Length: 222
Image 1 (cartoon, rainbow, N blue to C red):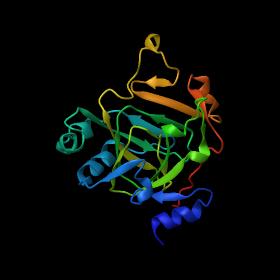
Image 2: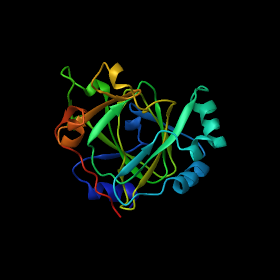
Image 3: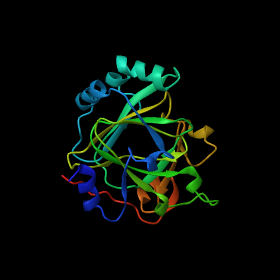
């Protein structure tokens, strides 16, 4: 039984689709790239915490690698792409965000991405979580996630946690000046965020409540 088959058996409540499946194509693209060196460096630079997840917009050990410059030239049209990481423990949907630029992800470990499209948001600015799709990103695979794809922290496939390299246009997700904020959904530079209705802590801290329905949970397989 493959890892994906094991994962699907453990999570019958939601269909989990490989990013290698054509059904991923509206959400992003698989990139044929050598990610071994960056994956190895990620594990060294970003130790898994005991609980919770972490995100760093640009991890110096990754951002300054020759591979990072290669990716900028090959996949980013020579834009100054920052290479950071999201890592730790997560099992729930909880929220969804989007940017005005595409995002690059490397599965340093197996993980699941919960994704939707901006066009799934209704005229009232709400999203039914039934529109969310689950995609399996295997270890060692690099993808480009399109700018109109809603996403958030990956879900772990192993209880040992997850690592996901994140490439974005430099400055994305950095702090904003609250006095200049015009859209309540903007929580950082180039970051629009909607919280699931169950996430009262996020909502109390000013994140717009915009997702209703099931707060999808992915159970790890080992």
